[in-house]
Length: 392
Image 1 (tube, rainbow, N blue to C red):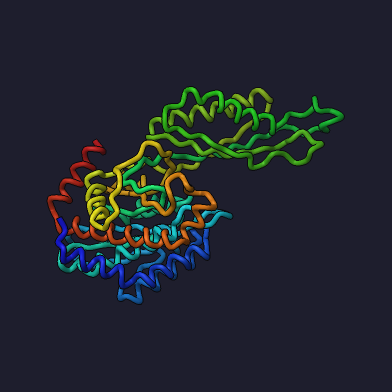
Image 2 (image 1 turned 90 degrees about the vertical axis):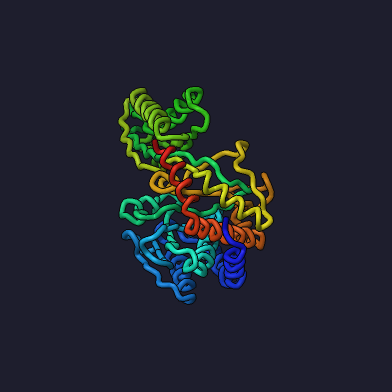
């Protein structure tokens, strides 16, 4: 358990920084930047941390907008608190990444205020490009997570949950190539790339009866032809394929690729399929999640462990959870079923007073959890034992 004295210092640190943190949240929200282009957000985060006496490394893992700050003594346990700050095209911060960044900065400041009393090291990691870019994966590949004992962050949602699944994912870009012809005078001389593209959607829909629970396949046409009076010589589409684990993902991906090849064969066209690896499934460390939940409850915000009524997306925090014990709890910034991520109403909520208050609750609970992990060797051992068993 975390001492009352340390908890009070953590909470007071977040409260004192509240105006600056709220401004950070609003500034990031008002200036949405796409993956790998989060230059303003990264600069504002670095500026706030430096103003409070922290050294900040920028350009981490070869990414200009990746950040790291550290406080404490090296050589002991090391806990990472992760922030995200990229936005979505057109719809802005409809995933509330401005709040994720704010909570992570606040948690790092609060944990830093007491880390000398616990030993070990607390680390802030600013992770770019969660929305399809996989910034955390690049950081894993460059060794940023080596030596870290646990990692944590929170995500805005429509309800409070300590843990929820995240799906393994990949993207498939398909380009169909046929032969053009006059669509009225000689349609029989053409080979329609668009027909094959559309048939791919229909064939995939027909295969959904073979998908296990949790599988999601969704796509859109990126090129539907060149003119209305020409049999389309070129057409293309892109699919996202998701499943609860990598084995099912591979099985479903093979089905989707067969559908595209069958559609191309039927229309006598060719198809080129380019795969882009996505994210791994999320392995929630429940020992750590329950510790977070206890601190959240102490702040007057009890949360259920999970809720199987809600669907799941994908996140590169899943990749992190395969290399270090991790949590990715969800906290509400809207009423239940009022709005969800990637909707305009959710983007508006990410700028609301309720959103900022939720980020402050998350900052305090994350900081408390991080500090408890640094102070309690038995808790760290339990967290690691659960993670090792899940890997096995």
